[in-house]
Amino acid sequence: MSCYYNEIQGMCIEGNFWQVNPVTGANWTAESAAEYIASYEPKEIDQLQVNKGEAVERIKAAVAKRLTSTFWRVERAQERLELAKLGSNDALIVAATETLQSELLMREKLREASNLAELDVADITDINELNLFNFIPEEYMG
Image (cartoon, rainbow, N blue to C red; front, side, top):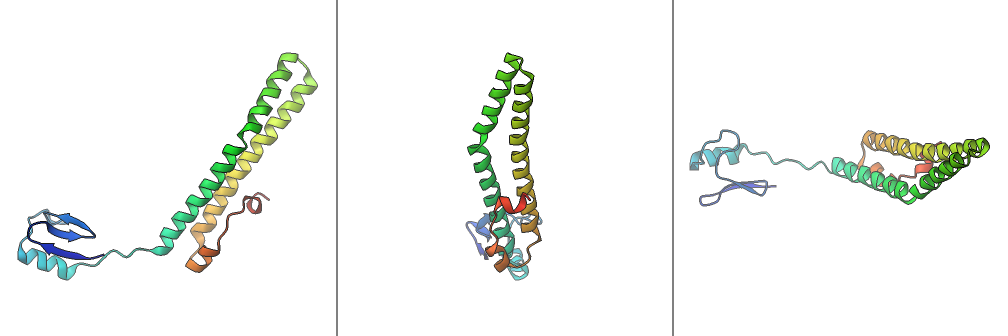
């Protein structure tokens, strides 16, 4: 980005106008504006960090989509457990409990896979390697 001074609008720093010096809080003068511009170093956009953030968001979105689209399985397992309890059938209660537990464990494994993938993204130091990264939950669910 850039930095320049306009007598009416003030100092433009990174696209935002400042009526006062953001460091000192003093009003701009021709001299202080010139000094600021001379010492100004633009913020560098770290494209790797930007891409890492986008990769993490894609991971989170994929997991959220899968959790949402498979929630019906948890609801069905809960309903079957309640029916088994109402019928007082111990064998059905055990089977329904195991089914519910299995569904909940799969959801937890998916969340853990997401966490592991996010750690992998954080460890990437090369933008080309990051661009090749593709989150496949099953690869992390081992």
